[in-house]
Image (cartoon, rainbow, N blue to C red; front, side):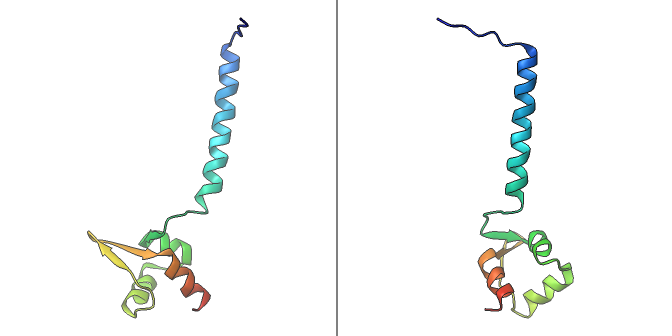
Length: 86
């Protein structure tokens, strides 16, 4: 039976590599979210608009939304269609 000895340096190297891989995963996933419903702040960031502009889009009916417990949610699909002009 073969036994390997793990040193503190080995553990430190493993930790460094693991953190580096996790950071890369978070970077690649942060820009491409798969959520189908977005909150107001996410929509404003996505469209690069102010809170007032988002409110005008809601009031004019250009951007449908759902209100759940005081929080407004917007369909990612509807936003993408609006951006495409459909």
